[in-house]
Amino acid sequence: MRAFTGDASAAHDGTAIVDDTVRVFYTPLMHGRVRSPVKLREMLCVHFGVEIRVEEFVTSWLDFPAEDQSCMGLSGMSLGRDLRVGKRAPSINEKIVLHVECASLDEYRSFLPGRTRQAELKDLVIGYTGGFLEVDVALWLPRRAIGGAALGTTTELGWTSAMPQTASAGRADERALVRACQYAFDMENNFLTGT
Image (cartoon, rainbow, N blue to C red; front, side, top):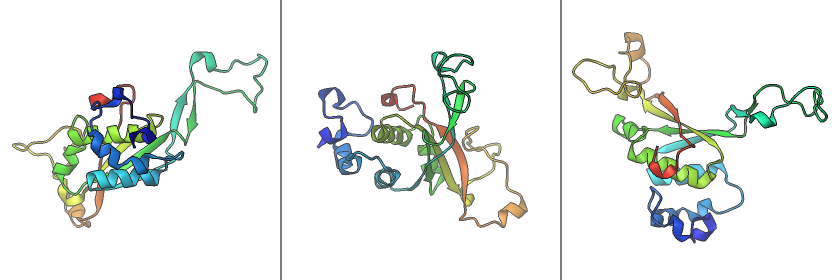
């Protein structure tokens, strides 16, 4: 069945973060010409047991190599037809954001860069998309799970540090989700490294 997902060769055996037997379970979702965000979401929700939303059509930038940049005055460079101004252009087809709704601070920490679940997430997403998309991960936490940074407690600067809540913020719905952080997958590095 792994032949359907394109990773049936001996070169792929035992190289992925997610075990090969687990990946075979997801073959029906990975099979098909169209890789929809619905199938990606289903696969990730089943694997991790958390609610995950896939946001499509996120604006990103396409960088043009120097040899592909337009030059006024040359043939085939007509303004309004085939001329590109600048070194990059906006696109809405090259990037997605995965919104992971974590139930607790421990679950949130497991999805931070360098952790096991983040490596599994990256492995599954790159296996599904082929690495052709930019992927950001937004981690969400219930408001009650976010505590202010204080002396004598463990906090990770930039990941789990927050300002203490004011009295007015404390009256807000504590079940409401708050975007705790957002980071991008490093697509330049091999996904087998888990970074």
